[in-house]
Image (tube, rainbow, N blue to C red; front, side, top):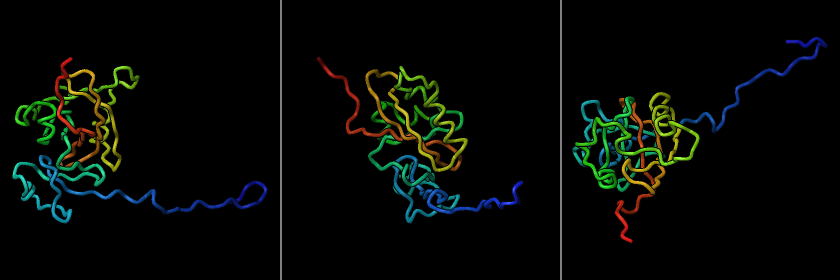
Length: 180
């Protein structure tokens, strides 16, 4: 293509590099966080964890997958809890049986009271589910009935079916009352 003066403009070309390399995804148990052997996709009829026998195998970005000592929740597109780890049961003082099919906000709520970003937690969870991709978001949360506690939550897509993985970071001890 020529410009009015007759000089040629440079043509656009595709530049490949690290930016277009997709993140590695791995399979893990939605209850005990055990990794699938060899990170291979399980057969559709064999998605129950062989380690604990309780969780469903899910796929998520490898850098977002929790380990067995992490507290984590799996949230569906209606923002309902679909699974939780034993560590999350202990941390949030609720059993998985009572938490499943309950709204996320009955377990954790945003901890940034003064932040201007309303819907940060719900928005991050909804984005992880709707957009998928490899992005891992974060938000500060607290148990719904506990004040003065802040936990960083990593939020990543997982599935199938499409869901969000919410990993509560930095939890060395369970929450407890402090006597004065």
